[in-house]
Length: 172
Image (cartoon, rainbow, N blue to C red):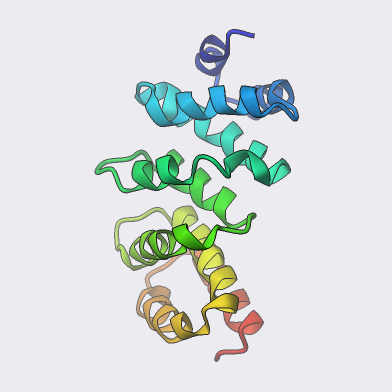
């Protein structure tokens, strides 16, 4: 498969699934996909984001050697929403290594607090921080405050995630 050409061919669920299937259990193929996701031009990066997240959800070990690159990408100014959304989606489904947890927390808190961030990015960030709050209960008050500040202005997806988080962490 000429991966870059396949990514550019179309942006659809079927194409995403075909790429995920092509990657299969191959770390080497995932690394090729991830390299396009991190380093290619705008359209390729945007379209590679979806299959990257699905691959990691299926095989969490794929991302283990890519955390630094992922964090650096998320910290770039002007990074596309698809990169943020799919990165947070994959992060909610895995165990984040301890040495990267602080950076991920900062990114997720900033996404939730931002008045301009897309709802899906905020919703995935809530779940990422909720997962981390189990290990770091000291972040719960800040998380609760930020969510409460945003709550009334937000869309149903945000509110649903927030309510579920509050229930899971038994904070009212």
